[in-house]
Length: 425
Image 1 (cartoon, rainbow, N blue to C red):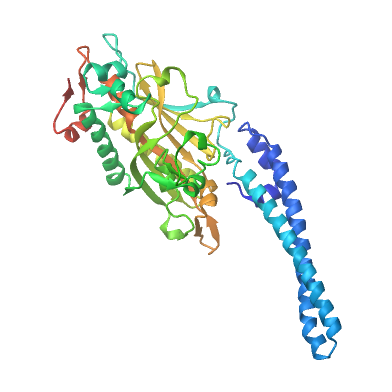
Image 2 (image 1 turned 30 degrees about the horizontal axis):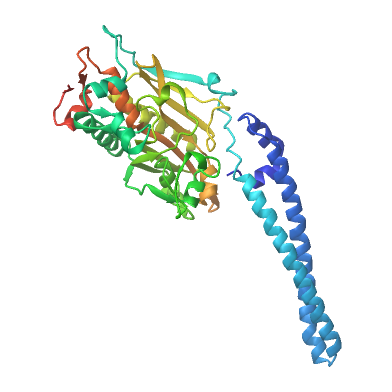
């Protein structure tokens, strides 16, 4: 959530930044209009409360002097003022709720280092690693490789759960589990993250804290009648973990990593992505989340991005890093790098991780603060990134490590996690 003080202090700056995200900046004018009315009501309420206090104090003196008639008149006037104060306070509450509702729908402003652009066509490539493999045969897509091995079943999944689900079995199921363990081990042992095991169901306010609600409610799986949600990513839990807490500056930065299933309705998605495992309703992910102070968050984003890249490098999967332009940057993000892995079935790079600095946007929504070196309270900065999306990593291995006979080689780094198995056939 944006800082209301910033909007009051420099509305033109906020409008300029939001326009780079293709946002309707008239919401800022609406917030300021409500804010002006709200402050007028607060001033009027304060004046009335002061008058009531004076009348209340006069009653005792009037009664002590035997002037009961004037005392009753003062009591009556005080009651009338009290009724007016209640009316103003009710109106004030209505304005505050409206202001909060609008403010909660406004995205984070992009950082100065976010490249300008209207949409994904203007994203900026930062770097590449690895060279896509040249096949001596026609490579198959994963949605053929897996079923041909009889270890990936879309038909049974559709029969039992509906479209865009998948059942994995045997060595491919083992490979997915190996990937989870490999990612967690790498991030905890080499990158200093603390492993967390979190629930997959959260309250509405937890979804709100990380910016999933109200904007993305139609994408979420809601559990009725409890009004709870299946998490779309472990970020929701990790970035809310210290909700309503005050941290000491010496505790920062905090590094968390968690594996979870993720649930997304993917409403409105279409095209080639509906085939196979690229865009499904339930998928596995290892998520990285950091809490930092306001000075180090952009440096920490660079480190987090390289932590995610390291997984791809160890798996020897070609990828590139993309800096998202302002028009393609997510709701809560100030700066985002996408990692895109090479997929032969697309003949292109496909997103496998999105690493973002949300600055104090989530910290403000979740009310997570820390005491800085001057002992003043600030909202924490939060960062998040996939380290990595497990299903898409599995897909990348199946497609990039496939053989002409339909078998799939296991990346060297995963062989110990596969109990020595070097090939799936």
